[in-house]
Image (cartoon, rainbow, N blue to C red):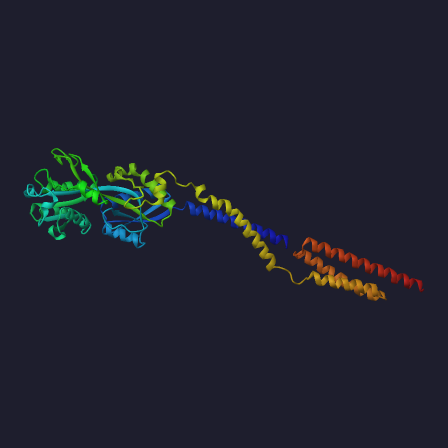
Amino acid sequence: MNRGIERTVAVVLLVAAGAALWFGYELHSRPAELRVATGPAGTDDHALLGGLSRRLASTKAAVRLTVQPRSSPIEAANALEHGEADLAVIRGDLPVPGTARAVAILHKSAVLILAADKQKKKIENFGDLKKRKLGIVGTPGVNDHLVDRLSTHYGLAPADVIRIPLTRQEAADAIRAGRVDALLAVGPLNGPTITRFNAVVTQAFKSVPSYVEIHAEAIAKSASEYESDEIPKGTFRSSPANPDDDITTLFVAHLLVAKSSVQEDKIAALTRLLFDARVPLQNEFPTARLIEAASTDKDAAVPVHPGAAAYYDSSEKTFMERYSDALFYGPMLLSLVGTAGLAAYRYLSRDDSFALSERLLRLKNVAAGAAQAQHLDELAALEKELSQMFDELVAKLARGGLAESEISTALMVFKHVTDALNERRHQLEAKAASTL
């Protein structure tokens, strides 16, 4: 094979190896783009993830978020299930997509039921809402499962409680006008949502509102999507204290979940960045302080994503751990590919114009012809033929393609034939001289 071509192929392989390494580095260093569905716009979760997205972009983080608002947590879950998003914010008491894996708990929302002033003594627990009007603050349909669960616990049929959907703006007027007997809201204990709700409560109630009792501990034992906890006295206002005593109520988790198919290292990086951002985000987004780890228990309602679990138990893989096999086997594979490439090139570029076996047979015939030659003219013709074959051999050597053993064999046969011609020439010349 021509040495120049071999050098060219070697350079091409080196360039290809360098390009592969560069491409691998670019692929590794390129930020992962993830789509997160939240709903609806204007909620604490949507605002928080919008702030997180801007922070990740400004700090050039390894993961970037594109926030996609949906009309409700139900629609956000549907977006995840149908592949329209990589992550979603869902409520733990709403249908969970089968492919959802928990990343973190963004916050837990408390269930609050307040009786209207004129109903304070008539509505003491949820069971007293039979045939009463319950104003439900928030996105229509989102709290239906919650009301159904409460109704079942208190032995009420779904139709026994008259449900009236309300926005925050409508809630105060509904209370004052007597259009509802009680008000239900679900939200975190701090942040913009509860602040706005408290403003509504202040406008609607003449004094500290009466909180309707629910059997939170009993319900939480039978419904794993809820948990029972207390709202301390004065949580919403200190003077006069609101509430005026500790309240035991239900809490529901708002989960950041990811599709199970999202790569483990991306979710591990996102989880780390999310928890790193908790403190920086708290001034602008108070609910950031409520972020906590997702449950890693095997019987958790929403299984934890392996990437998030790797962050929680400090088992995130390093660059070398993730790519050690590629770094180890890559050069070996490249070497094999290069060897195969060179072999293929040699095969495809083989020179069939020079067949050594054919030349050797011709050389044998020249040697035989030399032994039988009777005149110098015959020898001259044979020597000319030998000279042509030698030129062909030299040209073939210049092009490459002969093994060392073939070259040595050819040269040895050429020497033997040359010697045979020279010897026969001496014999004929001596014979000619003796006849003079």
